[in-house]
Length: 208
Image 1 (cartoon, rainbow, N blue to C red):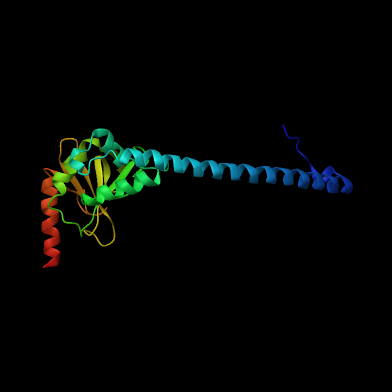
Image 2 (image 1 turned 45 degrees about the vertical axis):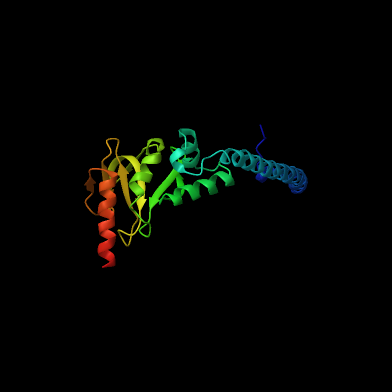
């Protein structure tokens, strides 16, 4: 254990000497730290390259149509977090956007993407597309002071409220709960398809 010092009890020459010793020791430590950091950066770069190559080979085996994806492939696409490769990130983003869903950030408790629906998307195929991967999206539980506690597949929805991003929860029984904002009463829908129909009607009314 490092011995504590009390400068108030030390002579001037002892203070000067100890300062010199500390500086010399810090110089050694900083050099070692720089070397260690360089090694970490190099290993991280190698790790990234290996992950990308591994995932590129995996992606080449995917069918072009998401309708033929396996459970393992969907879990690969939905996965998110700091440990996925750039190849996995870019490919999964492309797939989700082709299905009409945005994907940004991730839920830390599931390590899966935060899904979203944007108002400029064509929504007619969303229910069918959602069914392709719905079974592989892990539900989350969110507790909010205003909205209370909800559990389900959480999907953000833009364009319904000027000041906030709206959110839906797709429940285990297939029903949907919508929060347009923290202050609006929640809306209930029988299914995701019913919600999308309501969403289409809402956007059409805005365009009229």
